[in-house]
Length: 134
Image (cartoon, rainbow, N blue to C red; front, top):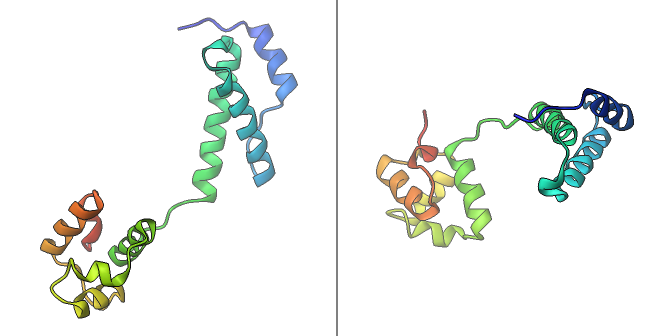
């Protein structure tokens, strides 16, 4: 563990004025500060590394509060994965016993079976559990 020079750290805090992030502008400012520190790599003084860690915690807290993920249904997850791969419904339907079943799954009129979840997990390289209702 590296020793922090308290006087240097106090000067750095006076210069940068870190505080709880409440707005997008404050978040953007903190992210810019973190990027500057990161660009310097291993050349940071211990006081700068400490400030960068604090800013990172503040950004994470703000973003967790602001951009909290809501739970998604298996069909929503499937649609997102399809979109990321630019996969069409016709291409997806090849993974199901019929086009109708694929359509019903996407419309959330039918649940994804365990066998279909395993196949989707293999195709998208994710856990099959993402496609099962819990």
